[in-house]
View 1: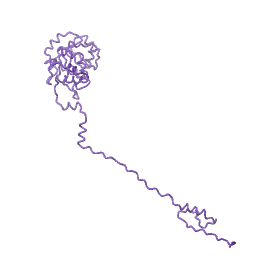
View 2 (view 1 turned 90 degrees about the horizontal axis):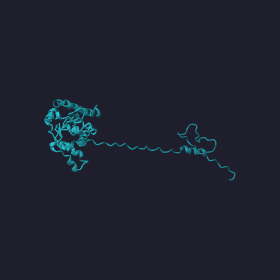
View 3 (view 1 turned 135 degrees about the vertical axis):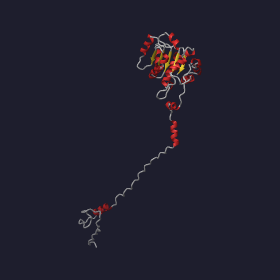
View 4 (view 1 turned 90 degrees about the vertical axis):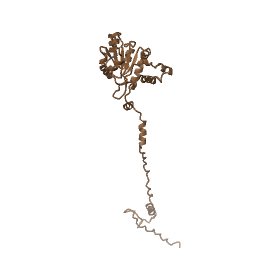
Length: 286
């Protein structure tokens, strides 16, 4: 029928949800007759939230376990350590120096800078060497044995700026010890200290110019310097004695110290080797 009134459709009643906050419009008993807004709100409120994220597992820390050092590895490590000269000398028995020791050191020192022919020219005749100390002598007894005519030589020596005998050692302290220990041999001989400690080169030059000196005891470095400056002449020299067998607190001999060994060989080149070859100069190893 055209004039009949169409009945209103009733909205379904929504039960309250536990998530609803107090006072919130739930659509129950709505008086405005508009259900669209309530339906939209209900859908938004009832829509499921984002799913809780899964717990991310962090990577576990990894520790490398160092292998334990075995006895064999420890032995290899010890073997790689470079042996010190002190350790070697401490285990070795005292052995007196010989002329062959000096010859061997000379060839080893010059082997990298000289040819085979030049090395052969460095070889000294056996006749230029005095008898070596067998470790039973004091300095005075050794010098008396190798220089029996010392008193006569000393009396005939009158040339200044020179000495008849040079004793070469490794330090000033050792030089003083040697001077004290040769009292029985030197007698009335004039002795000069030829080292750098507390004594200037010019003072030693003046002493050599003023008076006749028979014995000089000192280090190779200072003796070299005196020769360079013309304060010491080598031609009258008759004996050159090396303090070869004495050892310091570290058990090193004079020629075991690279700096002193270098100065000794430089001194030998300053006319000593040529005098040895003419047999006017004798070398001794105390």
